[in-house]
Image: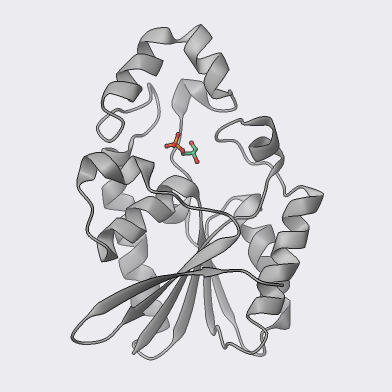
Length: 198
Ligand code: G3H
């Protein structure tokens, strides 16, 4: 049995401002969530932690990593959030005002839409699965593995275990105060949502 813990980074400064992309740090509330995550996993071994290369992902994992007895950490660029190209750092309201055509095109077909000079869900597929394969290979069959990802990344990873139609994938809810516990056996995959109780 392999346990995979799929966690979304805690609240970042951009989350507060409803901005997308960039490389913001956690807010005070985000740090509290990171502490709650560490406490939640105090008695649960997590020998492998995979983050993205972004601060909000690494900061979310940092307290948990300190508290785990043995923990191997890898920061994988494959798990970096979807790159919003010309829309990086903007709010959805600003995108609608500055790039109304882009805003509508994304609304119409969010999965296949690709930000100019950036990525889309469809174009994320390859790198996210490369990262997932790498993470599962490095952590080996019997280990507890945590991925601290981002909203779009976690949607793609989850869809791999819990089948969804592609058009629905960009709308999967990925809360910051719950994680997905994915249990893999030779025969089946199970997914449960677990609240992060401090
Ligand atoms: O761009 C960053 C967001 O976390 C992805 O969310 O695909 O719903 O816009 P979205």
